[in-house]
Length: 315
Image (tube, rainbow, N blue to C red):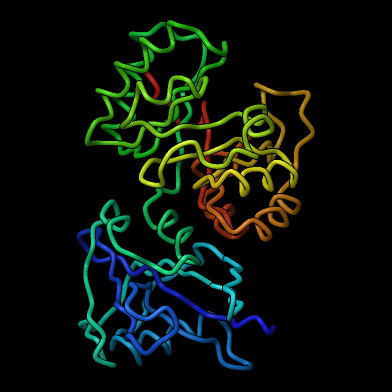
């Protein structure tokens, strides 16, 4: 079956809300909500198709856009390649030129709308920021919490409370404080044994590669309303992450790092190849910082993750 190449747009308004459209009942996957877009015509570039489709469908002229994520998805009756773009600037007043209902939705509310199955990674990518802060080790609790508070004040939206010593009871106490610190301001990702999941219902969970190997065959350990991530280092672990139904991953190390000098870096080219076959948001980790965000986007990644490069100075 031939794969249909489609462009889709995550269109962001000045207030941060995202524009979605409802599919006509007569269409494939009719009645569901979608990110506006359409088929790439023969000989047309994805960027050109994006501009044409948004003009035809919504009356918009795209002024600023970048690739967000690419997803290959196989329905029983149709194979699609979704080429998704993040549109951050446009002119014109959007309207349903084909009569389709539109809605401006806050990113966190996207999960409340019913989309085609292929759109699940797009919803995740639209909701996630481009930077993922991982807390450093070796700090006492007060210093760690003050650093997290400062990072959130500076705009951090996704934070992982790292657990370098494994299943330490002191980590649980720290996690309670971190949950309170992030409430309503940032998404907190915790680590640790899955037996702790029920104790922190508002937090997401970041699995180690070891946990992936142990639990992937069991599938997702909690409902889709809660973030699930994993640490991956190769194609095998990315495959396990897919099997487990994670929402996003970190892929590392891209470059040599101080924390893991013995690890063989993937390099940008191999990282790009691994991302291309994955189809979910990927944060590149290891020897990268905020200045590499554009390069990560060029590789097909959601963005970059880091410890030292993202931790606020002078706590």
